[in-house]
Length: 264
Ligand SMILES: Cc1cc2nc3c(=O)[nH]c(=O)nc-3n(C[C@H](O)[C@H](O)[C@H](O)COP(=O)(O)OP(=O)(O)OC[C@H]3O[C@@H](n4cnc5c(N)ncnc54)[C@H](O)[C@@H]3O)c2cc1C
Ligand SMILES: NC(=O)c1ccc[n+]([C@@H]2O[C@H](COP(=O)([O-])OP(=O)(O)OC[C@H]3O[C@@H](n4cnc5c(N)ncnc54)[C@H](OP(=O)(O)O)[C@@H]3O)[C@@H](O)[C@H]2O)c1
Figure 1 (spheres, rainbow, N blue to C red):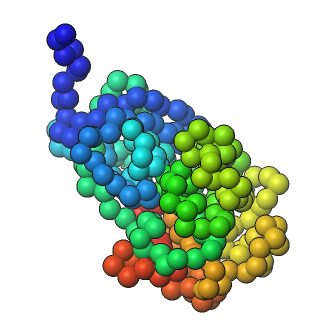
Figure 2: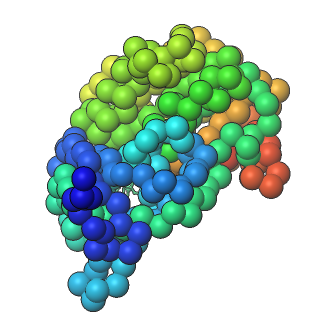
């Protein structure tokens, strides 16, 4: 039978297979995966569209799907006057995006020394790399307990993460790895919800540890991955170092790692 598949018209083109709008500022989408693309859960790639000048307009995006997934998922902000996302927010199933198949990043298991409890700290779209790592079997093979702390301004901003996390224990592929190891600690800062407050404040006053019934973070047992605004990352680094943890990298694993969710 003749191959009737649509020919890619963009360099490094991938086809959009799913789009979901969560709020007027947040959406997620899935695209086809290049056969040659290998990545570690937690890494990011450059994606984009052709700009008005005919040149690729690319931005860094964490891959939100796990390394074993046949497709790639992304979770995106919509910046109304943003060069890329003012256009990207209008993509539809069947459209093409550009995806440079060169994954990189520090939020990977290789950058952490072995430990017992793994903390994921995210604000806003910073949950994207953890949406990948929470679906990665190695996460549960390496740790006894995994705690996803996600803070957003408003309750609706948490919904992508909440729905994903609630679906995971029943997931036919990853559910049995997770068992009861994954815990979820969502908070909001500008709208009333059951758990309120910035991650940083709740770590410093001990609220997170009290609410979860776990001891304070320590170098011996705890490992952490952080993804948020530059302000969040800077403040959290100081707090984690105060607990005795040191920053790791691919070349030199240690007790915590950090990645920017966006550049201000
Ligand atoms: C390592 C890395 C990984 C990233 N992963 C993601 C991701 O998974 N999902 C995602 O939506 N963005 C991610 N970003 C941000 C992304 O690269 C773009 O900045 C974003 O898509 C907006 O592009 P733009 O051209 O529309 O606006 P830009 O000109 O890039 O940004 C305009 C302004 O919008 C704000 N902004 C940009 N991105 C965000 C964001 N994600 N959350 C809140 N405010 C933002 C900032 O104030 C920025 O100065 C990542 C950035 C880095 C450095
Ligand atoms: N989210 C929205 O509804 C909204 C609407 C319009 C425009 N914007 C713009 O979009 C950009 C990003 O917005 P965003 O909400 O995605 O990200 P954000 O401003 O980084 O806030 C996300 C969450 O992180 C918290 N946070 C920020 N800095 C922190 C720090 N240093 N330590 C601890 N917690 C910290 C915020 O708490 P606080 O609430 O206490 O700051 C909030 O709960 C901003 O420039 C904003 O002006 C956002």
